[in-house]
Length: 500
Image (cartoon, helix red, strand yellow):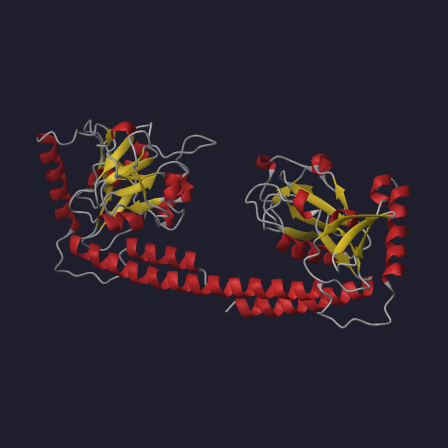
């Protein structure tokens, strides 16, 4: 698979270093552009259209070729620039080329009906795309103050900046005060700043400067002080055009890869469906009947009960029987209970039961550590409910769950299913640890993945209480192993195909 995120970062890095498009010696140098931008701001201050920013600083190159920062009180200090720029470019900061100090606030009740109002949730993270366009329907829609902005304003989400919620406004409107509306001077094309705010250097600098632990925000003074490269005005548009061409290609690649991934997922689900219906590997008519299989399962459950690993109620069985109406019913002892939905026909010599009767759920509390305790290295792996096999590491020996057999991990919130074969520490709430009864743990994992196809996705709500009630069918161990091998072979082939 092509790493389009890395390619996007490379395109933006080349653009900001002046290496994406060739320079034209006939372009007016950025130093002259800075002079005009400064004169424009002074003129607006004289006209009292904006206020002078007392915290604004100015980056300039001295006669010695070094860079300096001049503060409002006249003091000057030498600054280190991130990298060297091409001839005709200059280093500046966001505050010098913008009017970010002039936020125009409007009471929520005074927003005109039909006006575009931007909230943070309207912006897709990391992509710079608008998810939805919301307009004010009445004067009571908004209670809090909003910032007013015009078309061409860069809207930057200051809350949780790691989400990279940035858009370029294509019309006037209002936005939450958790967004900086960055209006630029006429010498800097807004679309270039929009792209620049997605560059890796800027993202890293902002994320290391935030304040607030649970709700990190960007300090406006720091944001204005961010050093950015200023190309000649004519070159700015050439850079924008080249970036947009590259991003269009990357979006096409993303779509193709997403389609391929979706196809691979569908194929794997189909293979799993065929496997659980007993049609993936040949069924041997000489295989032991379900009555023999059931006795083996009963024997293992009895052994677990005597060891104190199962309760007496766990020995109770519900047998699936077919009624005269060809429907299936759950039979407990001698009484035939309610009609049940099996979703599909099961092989006659497989044992059908609810999922919860074929697993032991291991309590997690004594093995769990806090999210903040997870480290990038350590003696013991930490397992959570994310898609990652290992979430991190810890040295907490007192929290280790010692394994003798493989276990299945189910993410109660995330629906992720994992097979774990080494001792580990639990890293989050919502982790369900399941030990198979009679089944090969890897086959239990396949059973869970298949049963999930019939459990409604409830977002981040819990799912196991629904999953454990699903009906699964279990064949003898020999057939389990054959199915595991076949599914593994097909998955490997599908994975190889989807990498292209």
